[in-house]
Length: 403
Image (cartoon, rainbow, N blue to C red):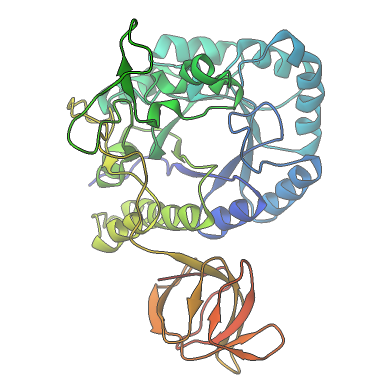
């Protein structure tokens, strides 16, 4: 196996500061986030100005990179505030911005020295479009999800700009995320960050002259979610992804949990590193970990060009094989105890596992618990309650406890 190719960046979502920390601690090379305005996750936690400065400082202290999503399709009324925001991001020291709107790109070039990454929302599906964006000042192109491996490889032969592709996470039924369905049905514009995920709803037919009479669209007795996409997972084909020559491998999920971010990042970090160590093979524990985080059934999307269907017709709900219980905030080697910040209910006698940022996952039974006052308790039912438990092995801070 030839590995005479540059090691790609592993890029992870940062829906808030805690998720940013988890992504970087679990092995991401870079993170992307959205501010309170102008990104496509308007209902996420997102970052205010003070948090952006904190995030940049934390990321750069680790020698890693941070990108700001400014990928709305702007309207005239947005331009003045956008100008101020772009200048702030430049001063804050973010490493790049993600844009999809040509007006935003032009504004960024005029007012700042920011590196510009073109978002997948721009729907770049051919190398000439990528070349044009490069001529306009873009340093990286996030390619449309609708491309095959062969097409991606052809981009590399023609483009000066870096290339980035999605390798894992939720897919949009509409063309690389350029969707008007939500705005049409609810008035909330997906292209301005307010998507209602209308494609994942369960639909019925109504005949024009029979108002109030609903006819089910059914695959079976559970109904049919006709536009509900599976989740992307390119782990089984990561060797081909790397060999295509892309510079950055992107994980979707700014609205996902800390458990999702940490687990998925750790798997892809291990897989990328194993490829460049010359011993790449898909390991059962990687696949098991990806099953533990919230996800829909996985698909390779368009990457293989095999035409296999990517929709799920019986439910729009994600599943997972593990429950996220808490985060290790401290470990005392002298007493072999871990301090846990609770995220899900757990109790004495329960078997749990610890996913560690760098160490191996291990499991044990909780033999006893104490609250923040040192009082012995049998269960931790309250959100973000801090408890201390004995652990069988040394455990890293930022480990996730799950059942």
